[in-house]
Length: 209
Image (cartoon, rainbow, N blue to C red; front, side, top):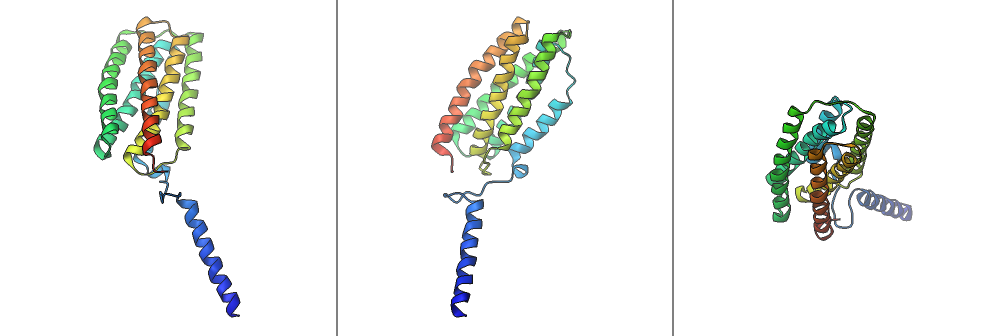
């Protein structure tokens, strides 16, 4: 009887250890539920707005409208990093994103106000690809390990956010015809490729898992 009791206690301790291992990694980091993560909340709100946008079937016009909203998502995330982050490198990158993408938002807004959209098969193809890019971004973010640490989560989720901007910009180069929008697409590709690499380098050194 005494032996059976000891076995039961040992089994209970083993199960407790197993459950802890399921929720924490080797460094004691408990992943945060995605719905509780402030950056995910920002992204889901931004995605809801983008899904509600009425597409015109004009690649250049829709690229400008989508990127204007997409940039706002990045700006909102960057403002959150300035508010809650601790790492100076991440805070500097956040400020750079706010500065550059606020300027680009104004350029997109100016183009939208002065451009009359004309639907085309190329534009419709762009719209289809753009929505696929957004869906891919959200799936990528939904598979991220989130820690509740502002600097880490900001860096990780901005990689996916930037990648979707790259994908849309590449589609603009494929389907768009207006030079100013094509030039902005190339600028986004050049800048955000560099920033993705910087975020990745920082995460390799600083991630807590």
